[in-house]
Image (cartoon, rainbow, N blue to C red; front, side, top):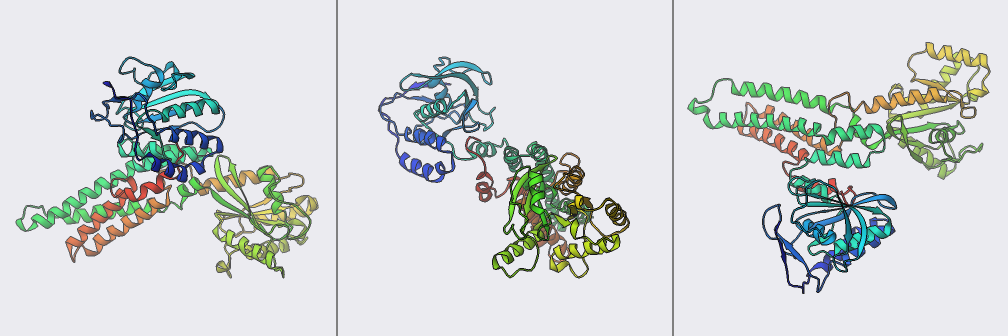
Length: 544
């Protein structure tokens, strides 16, 4: 690394636009404390009369000018007060920041070794904090560029001061959301599916989500799609060779027959991959569980028991709940979005009718519906009680599934609430009759008042959710994004084009294989990635 001092009267041009754009698009999304940090850093990008350093980057060996340098910095650890905060910088001017702020005199600090240094303001030389600094020279860094990390104390004033100081280093600017990871992708450090896995890992809230995201980030899903891409390239090469050289008798007989077999085998593999019942997507976004049933059945009480707080109003007045009350839960490591709905009944009240309409709409969209029944309304005769339950379930089902209602065990749970109001003998007879009858979903008997049966109900609920999500470690890599499914369906359809035109027009058949290859490339980022990059990176936090 070669350091060269520049003249002192340095002026940045065009940075007001950057400042305005940053404030407009990014600052409003940050907590109030961090907004001030970033505004201070951006305002300090316009510097006059500051001694500066210029360097030869280890990335490409080309001198980096102050106007065209793209070195970014950001707070990479969590916002707010904490014991240790990590500020990261990446780009050709990272070494400049390290030298100017720590006073290191040797040209190349030991890579990936933590050094305890006094971190100073490059202009006033005031000591801002004492912390650890780590140097990651290109290409052996997360982004593939020269990078530096400052591990400082996590107080707001310390963070503000360090970011303010970095903003005063020539050639540095605040990073945009996800920009570090985007640079890692562009440098070939991560594939697009791995980038998505990293984003999912950052946002994972349950154990199962963490496992699935970590598995995708490790590259399993990307390797599967890359393997399919290599196969398609081979198929395409054989078909193109047959088109170009078959008349010269330079191609062996049976080449196309072999390609036909390969395409059929790959289609079958893709079809199995697509028929995953959306388990990976469901695990990523959460299982939609809806509580439905008649008024005053105890739906809101069940919601409050499950989330262990008074999330919904409970009242003996029928029709208290009118809108959807939604809460996120962790059920045995699996993400659940639990919704309480309005009681299902006919009502002259237009507001309640709208609530019932929304409740039925949410049932249609649900992955799992908990049908709650008030045991106090059950007939005393066990057989009549079963008939009553079947009719009650039919009233909850979407209308298009009638008149022959089916109650799939993986979509419905029948919850008999207020069992404390039933005589013991009636409960025993009802239990025997329910065990004898087929065609009903799993039945749980609980009392939200006495908590009786709640543990057994939670075990059944956990089992149902686990079936809906699958085990992220015990099966083949699953689809986790809607865009993966869309591109794979396009790939599958393109292979069908090959089969359709194989005996009619071999050039059109080859084009089908080429389209299939392009569709797969859009998943991994190898082909046509630009139009989807913004969508993928928009949910990343600043500093990652």
